Image (cartoon, rainbow, N blue to C red):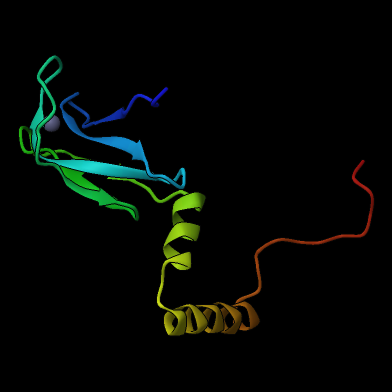
Length: 112
Ligand SMILES: [Zn+2]
């Protein structure tokens, strides 16, 4: 059974897009060029799919709805980079890891 699309709404409850899952179970958003109100049928020509993140503007009221990236989407984007870009990406992550210490204290003491 196909999973039902989750609707994205602006603060005034207009529907600005819908979340779908691609064949690799990565959430993506189909952005509506023109927002719709409850009960109206979804447009046939959405923008997208957007896999990363986006401030989606509502064409009715001008509010925006933030669509944030998920861990599966981030992994999907990296895995689909061209080979050289993947190499440069990991190099950059390693460079940053050396410079910026994580803001977490690690202790060998058992948690009480
Ligand atoms: Zn709106």
